[in-house]
Image 1 (cartoon, rainbow, N blue to C red):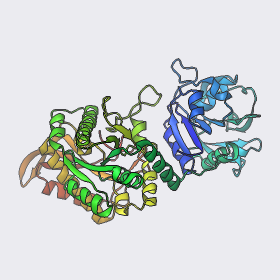
Image 2 (image 1 turned 90 degrees about the horizontal axis):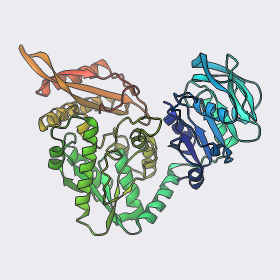
Image 3 (image 1 turned 135 degrees about the vertical axis):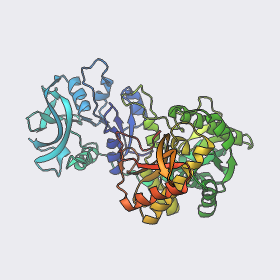
Image 4 (image 1 turned 120 degrees about the horizontal axis):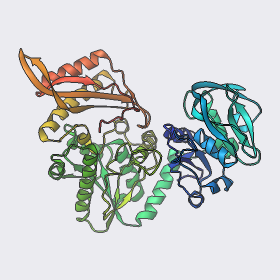
Amino acid sequence: MANDKVWIIDFGSQYTQLIARRVRELSVFSEIVLPHVKPAEIHDNRVAALILSGGPASVYDKEAPDLDPAIFEMGLPILGICYGFQLMSRHFGARVHSENRREYGRSNITLLQKSPLFKGVPDRTTVWMSHGDHVDTLPTGFEIVAVSENLAPATLVHRQKALIGLQFHPEVIHTVDGTKILRNFLFEIAGLKGDWTPGRFIEQSIAQVRQLTNGGKVLVALSGGVDSSVMGVLLYRAIGDQCVPVFINHGLLRQDEQFEVVRILKEDMGLPVRKYNYSYSFLKALKGVTNPEQKRKIIGREFINAFEDIASKYTNLKYLAQGTLYPDVIESRSVKGPSQVIKSHHNVGGLPKRMKLELIEPFRSLFKDEVRRIGAELEVPVNILNRHPFPGPGLGVRIIGEITPHRLNLLRKADSIFISEIRASGDYERVWQAFTVLLPVKTVGVMGDQRTYENVIALRSVNSSDGMTADWSPLSYPVLSRVANRIVNEVRGINRVVYDMTSKPPGTIEWE
């Protein structure tokens, strides 16, 4: 997708996605790959540099992830961080071992000599440590450039090759000069250009889509959300009437959404969208299902059934375009890698193996804020770009337990009240995402001097930049009070409202 490409090899660090974010913020395209990657794959994908992530394992653990040693001999610039640093050091003959001097949290490192890696960085700077293992002996060909407070090597640099090891995390904000260090690696050492921009992405994507489709029609799955809407505009610009934009009512939409979304797509964005109602088949397939993973897989399967049914009505319709994002891919990734599956996204883990349509996913390598920037470049209306994320499975993953028409009705009404109140207060534009969740429990209440035993609604509001991490939003007490009062008074069947104050991690943004 870009002339300069960096691969981040994931050894299971909680910060791996953050490395990818930081690299992209410097206008260099990056992707996360698994440790079993081979030199031929790196060469064939024209990767310009590698970053080895940290990880929870010790390099001597029996099941510790490893790397093909030939990768170190490819001549590529490589930056090893923590576990990646230790793995590289061991490959070049150093001794690595655990001891009681575990370093965690803020620390200071001292530079012992000048290096392009630390251009513009003071001789003493604050970094973020998170490791137990230490490199005890100097790897062959390396020299120490910086040490930690306990005089352990904090930075090693190879004398002839562009190989660098860091015992700290430059990607986290607690490392004061972390961005400078990453910038220096990318531009001063790896010699990259930093030319990955929204305009360049659009230009390359249009060329790729035209080449791939070669006159064939594309079913464009639109939900009205940011991702699919921007994708629809991009594909319509690329191939025009070859696009068949469709909006499917799966029965799991918010209040009045099926009408509002179609109006916006047609009137505000000029997309010739067609609306189809498959709510009966979705709800029938979900009847009695309570397991969240099973829900997502059923919804993914039903979407494909609906798309293939629609496709059969057209000639030469060969492709399905959907707005899958990079976090969807990462969180759905196989447990064969060191990072575990968080949840199967219906566009990824929920797709059936048998599919008649070939997938087109132009945003599969992007984060949501990057899609928003591309949308702005494509002049997508601001009211679309600023919409809160809404999951493809819709309210199906916001009803904990079985999905029924009655429970959907309760959640729709409560969600409508919550969103209307935060719009009125101005909070809608200040938070990343806000929604309600219907819980599978009932509680005792008193309404009109009578005992009630009704449902519980949870309010969820978070701030984030890309959905990979998030902090709960501290909405004001007056706003929360109005929302709670309106829900229990206006939604018959709900007598309690709670507020979710969990960040991601340890929680996820959606409850299922």
